[in-house]
Length: 419
Image 1 (cartoon, rainbow, N blue to C red):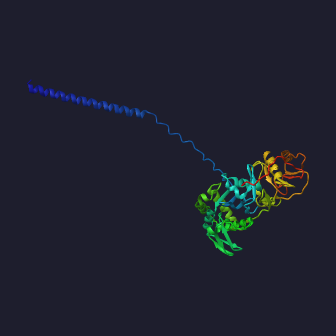
Image 2: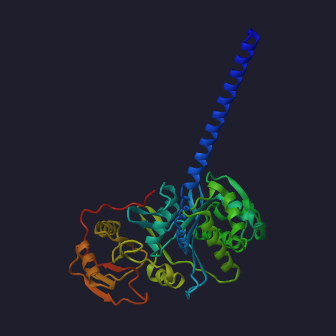
Image 3: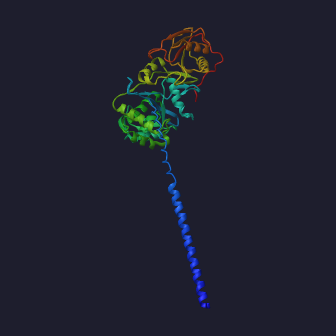
């Protein structure tokens, strides 16, 4: 075999070997692929995914019913305008809405809060103080409070297009510095928000608290009457007032309440009732004290659905009057009653007969009378028990006490009205 033939033969062998290797590789790859397909087809089908456990929606909590609201208009001198408002539930025989104006100098108190004029209750960082003191003093549950700065009141009045006011005599309204901010002629006139707000809460030299209360009422009542008949529109108006009108409830809740209130006022179903008070001087200052013999029956008629319930709204209320209601006597009684865990209610706004022996009248268990007598140090007090039932007649609180002329409260410091 020639050299050329040998070289050709070697080339042929190399080519044959290469083809054989490639063929074997292809066969191997085919076998691997076939095996993979076979194994996959032999695997059992995975079980269908288990259905996600059904989650029952949490029941929507029932909306909290707000039936009473304390509305206050404030200036740097305190809460000048105060109005307790009630909206009756559908199943009540009470008026659809009740408006109870409260004088700014009405003395109020609550457990842990010394007696003070209602106007000063907004000075505290405790936003619940105004509502709590009014509730404990009047014996009426207060579900929420809404405080408006004068500028917020102006904004609210403007949102309803202003109000019409009847001015009996020419007036000069002043701010807290004594500067005249508004002059009004006598007669019927239309007031914008700013003028209406000054008319409602501005100071009049020589004016009375009763006159100031009437001016505030003459502005806020028509404003409530002209509120929109849509909770959405009312909510927008409230939102626009911003931080100048804080409330203890949500904006939507307040809008819902005001919608019901405005509807009742527009329909003529709102009743406005002024509570009787008596002016009594304490520590050189005069203030108004509630006359419970006249005020409590009115509140029971207007707001039967919001009467204070001992054990639910707070401890039992103990109304204390005295034949000789000196500051020392009333201070000692207050310390004794509150020390026993009851709510002390100051009854010096009611005149009582001057009997020597202390009298206690209770509605329900006689045990309450015993506890009160023990707290006051008068175990020999005459006790009268009134059966439970409709809230008609005395006692005006859970227990009424009339301290006799023989009552002594040693060690009691004379009280002063909280500044």
